[in-house]
Image (cartoon, rainbow, N blue to C red):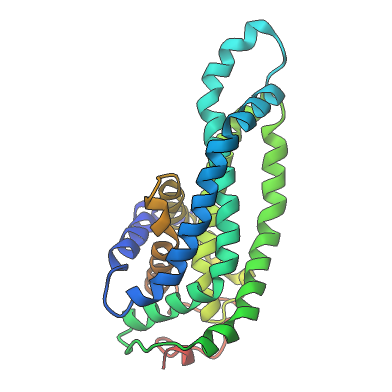
Length: 263
């Protein structure tokens, strides 16, 4: 596998640093508000139900043998981590469906900025026009995500085998975060969902480094509120610097530096 996880993580860090930049910050506001609202709900749900879910998962993973009770204490942090990953990624799916048109606009404006094009305001008519394509693309991601999510859920419930579930959840989360956010600039540039996944696999370590830092950031209270817009910006930087000038599958009508969306 090619790529560099540290370079991938660096794209996200650079995305964070661009959040307050003039000409960009006004396009950050709506994704930020959506993130605040939904993750406040996720935090409330975790505080209210987390202990119940952890007890249930431990009871399914371990036989009811007294001499195995010590394993409960060893597994508790791993199971708790799995619950956190499941809840936060589930809420992020909902947040990204709602915010998809705004994230697409944010990615477009960041790409304009990176290419030296004057960033112009976008009216509500343009945002509304993006809704069908943006939501359709989110549904494609959801169809890719759900079967793998359910498979991991089954693995987590198998005694003994479920011990590896937290590691698998994290790696899967890293990959899905890369897909989720890199899709915005690639969709803007007419790269199909299939070709986008192929492109990310070609630099899998870079993609996992980017998605891994996004995933870790989602676990930090308050910091996770900034993750969505920062990840969109970071993924756009990733696109411009590593993919924009490469032919990617079905990408049409676009030569190096000539994207009709950016003129």
